[in-house]
Structures are given as structure tokens and as C-alpha cells.
Length: 245
Image (cartoon, rainbow, N blue to C red; front, side, top):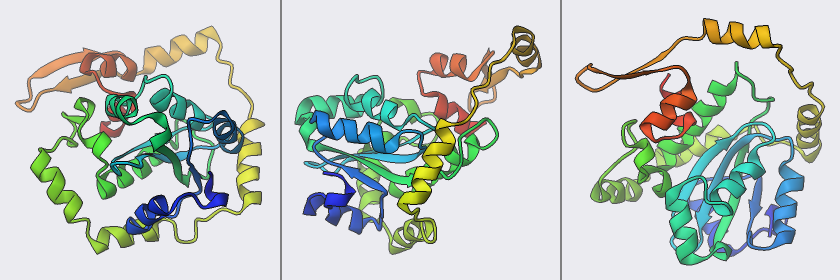
């Protein structure tokens, strides 16, 4: 069931309680027809997505760059290469108990210049909604997202009207018509692929700065050549590193 079929009442009730007005809602994600729908409807798009457990109402929030939404879906829910919390929950409750939701579309083709805006948008949703599956992962423990179980429960209980309004206001005037979404998709699919020459790649490496990671006492933990190397060393995602730079 996608947004056009309105999904089930518990899902709608949950979204209403958070003042969320998603672009697409995909229920029954264990079915091939639904997965094909996700592929077709999100092709060439970017934005913020949510993975919702219908049984527990626990959820995960992430961002996907242009043309990567379906890849993020399969990474988390099919191939289990994403969140460990999502992986364990899918194995416990079954794929049929999960919903894949596109909360918001990013209006531009994601590139090196505007990628930070997409991450900032994701950060807003993370800090406003405090998703269980994000908070409890070890990946974010050094970057301000780890909380004790008691604190987490208090935060969920105190989901204030102010934060509901902030979420609601975020999308005011930003709803896209089907025609606009199609134009965004076409623009992304028709973009020229950038083919860097070998000298260009060497020049970029030469001018790139090393990432120095320090502990809280200001002692240097390590120095790394790239975001990918840093993420591997700290056992977290590259997006976590990008948000801290």
C-alpha cells in the first residue's frame, strides 16, 4: 500500500501524532510488487526516509542522495548492510511488519556543495523525532545520539507540541505536485555523469585535507585521509562523520 491507498489506520495515526505529512508510504514491503513500486516512484529522487516497525512503532530515519532511495531501502531491510537495530528487528518481527516512508524530498540534485543541506535536514528530523533505531546504535555513541533507556523513554514521553509544530512547519509550502516530482526525477536522470581524468583525481587528493580525530581530553585519536577511512576506524557511517565536519 502506498500513500495513494492511504495505508492502514495505525500508520496514519502514528504519522498524525508526529505531525508528519509524508510524500510516499510503502506498506507490505515484503511483496515484489511494492518493491517495484518503490524503485519506479523514487527513481532519480533524494530526501529523508523513515523505516517504521508497525508492531512496536519504533523507527529509523535516514537520508538518501539522488537516485539512492531504493538502495537505502534494500541496504537496511533486504541485505542488512545498514542499521544493526533495524536488521535485528526485521529478523524478530518479519519484513511484513515494516513500512518504508519518504518523509520529504530534497528539491535539488545532491552534489558536493549542497550535500550538507541534506544532512542538516536529516539532522533536524533526528533531533526532533529521536528515533529509537538511530539513538540506540553504537555508531552514534560518540556524536551525541546515545541515551540511556530511561532518558530515551522520558524524551519520547515529552514529545512536545512545539516539536510537533516545528515538524509541521517544516513542510509548509514545500509539498510537490506529481508534475514537479516528475520534473525533479527527469532532471536527475538526465544529468551528465562527471568523468574525472587521472590528473584531476590526483589533484583532488593532493589538495584534500586530512581528518584529525581528537578525544574529549583533546588528545589526538588518529589522523585519516578520507571520510571513508575515518568512518571505518570509528565503526560508524560516513554520514555521521560528515555531520560533524
